[in-house]
Amino acid sequence: MLEIVIKGILIGLCISVPLGPIGMLTIQRTLNRGQKYGIATGLGATFSDLVYTIITLFFLSFVLDFIEVHRFIIQLLGSVIVGIFGFFIYNSHPSTQPKPNETQKHSLFSDFVTSFGLTFSNPLVLFVLIALFARFEFIGSGTTLFVSICGILSILIGALIWWNILTFFVSRFKNRLNMRELKLINRITGLIIILIGCVGLFLSLIK
Image (cartoon, rainbow, N blue to C red; front, side, top):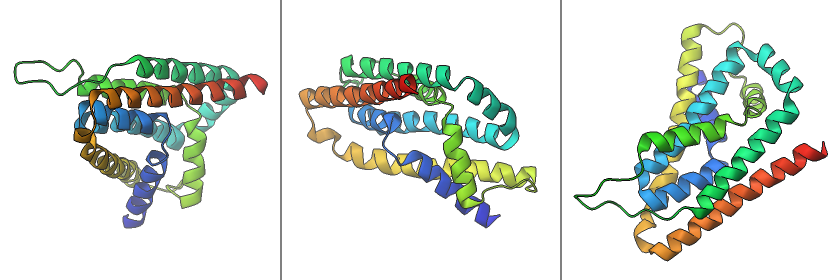
């Protein structure tokens, strides 16, 4: 059991640490809105990964066949969604922390949902999970349901550890940045996410 938990935490870290679109978005939201919004963004991506983890464990054959048949359209749509999302980030304006009598325009739930949707739009993450499961020999065919659930929860713990560490250090720089610098970060983040989407779109079209 302990071995499964440790492996799950390591897998959770492996799928969260790379600074792809979600990592950049988490940093941007932490700087613009605060640490709890960054954590909500990171957790949205993590829960999407957990859905794919469950699919990998219990419905692997069916899903892999579906992805193989529709690989082109999946890659195409996923890249377009990432690019559009990056465009909105590029044009967004930094949010200051609300004053006592003001309401916050953003919500933790909306940040969670948008991050979940952005990550879920790329089901090719299944292949990353399969590679990690094979590398760590994580949850075999003879594993009981209880141990499998513990393994899945340990992936969540590993991801949560990373998002807390990342947002903690990023939030320490928040008070050193003015509105102009925050807007610049929005644009840099947006451009990076747009670039990732464009590269994905180009690779999809040339295959």
